[in-house]
Length: 377
Image (tube, rainbow, N blue to C red; front, side, top):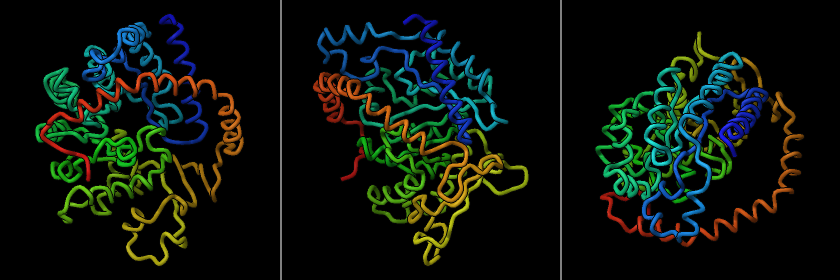
């Protein structure tokens, strides 16, 4: 694929994605997650573990230059940032620092600063990534971001599980927001984020669901409940456990901070955006009503939501989306899924071919001493 074809194909996809957000009425900040280094450079040990045949296949896979990707971002920002009366905004993302070149990492930061955009970065989700930082950069990935000058108040540092005291200090000094993804981290065995230590350093925390293939429901109510529960397994001191008001603040105020919308969303207040939900307190989740904040965190699962309003427009009421034909979309998805059998089989076969080498890499990293443990049990 030529650079021009690549840019045109991605532009087509981005138009479709952004139009979907526009049509459904959501408030969304969207970034382009496009690594630009060869696959085996994203991991420790993998270069040496892979047979030459597979290594050459990875080396020959198309990699886009920083210039191509920045050009795509500039088009994306020009076309979509602030669309739908500001409801849709662009953000930037490198995916993770080890997945891009140093040049591209820095140029994304320049774009973020120039346009006032959030910078989303997945950092130290796994022990493997802790080991990678030491093996590739001689430092943690948080320290690497700091030394490259890209750790700042516009950053949303996603995960932050395998962080040490120096990392936590740097995160606090930078003014960044940390995105806690408890269900995703449980599903893929990443570990447990040191919630209380980050809170004690006054690091803003929001909640997230990462990708839909790592938190299948993408239900923020269940994310909030998981965040309220999982830390009770990693610390016997019950006074350190998250309180329901803290979780609600992460869910609402932390989200506003992560989206660079503090002072614009997250409160019922004159001058704020009219983003709100109405809950039916007659459901079992709130019967009997005892402590509203605790029941919002530990009982509500989304079934009590009666109405959702975004930017003053009602987009959901009485169990139905009002902006798009949900039943028609689900029917279309089911129809499309029936045609993907060969693609799914090919992906499964490819994963099975690579699994022995990735497993060896994973086990080798898991055996390393990194002076911390974020697994429970």
